Length: 375
Image (cartoon, rainbow, N blue to C red; front, side):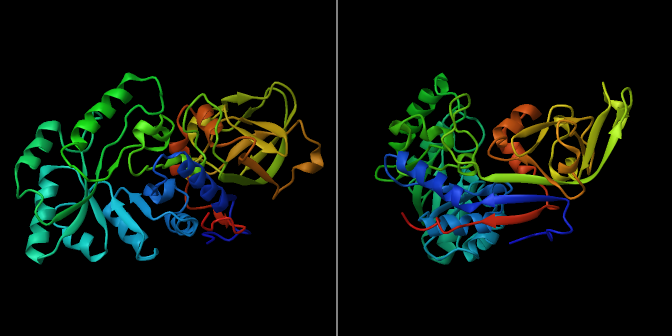
């Protein structure tokens, strides 16, 4: 599954599939229904949708959510027939036959999407599966309360459509005390009553931790699968998934008063030993980490000094014996002692952005010792 040869790549990205599976099992154990999907949109948050989904399938997951039709088409071909792939953005106008041909289930977000999907079903003389999304207060995707009532009062609106789930999405689930959570729950329950007997899905990663009231028939975790803390400010119960290491290109001594990198944003206060490391914002190591990021060698934290440039960062390695950092030495940029949320905090962003920004120049390896089997 390696994208770039380990000898030629400037940086290595290791993805622990066993940890992803363990995270899914933990989340599933918290869901009242015991039914837990996996959100693998954006190439599984940058980590590789096909290997991630294949591992989760072996662990027992059967429901997978992507954002775009194209993502679903790629993913569907690598999964067994009993796995269900849902397309959260629905189907672009005119692409409905492609959705059917690839065995995908669209999330219908508007009256127009419902009409187009139903028309295709009737033209084919078939019943086509779908999910109906309602807007419970996020004002992003889904039917408004008025549109939902209109659809339910029109006996022919859903003709030919088998509604697998009624769905909505929580806007503030990462803040357990936000009043929007209860407000959205109440709106969703009202919408669900218009679909008697139809299963429901509401909780995302953080929503799972709001309690059983939010779980319904299927939970849809995403970022928590990949090690992102589901409840900010609380201890993270998820296993770390990603290790990012970059190679030292060279080291040099910088004398006191000399500047390093673009605009000399860092000037050495004393004579310092600086390592130039092969990673930059072209690899998704964000420029906002300039002067804030850190590298690690073992337990030793090493400050990033100067600007993050396109292909390199510079790291102060003065705290280490000279022989320990040489060309080719791998320094950790994300690891269990410095996980994705810590990097995100330094960058002034969230773990989601850190993961999805990871580029294609890494040597990627997928670690799997055999834990991804049904529990």
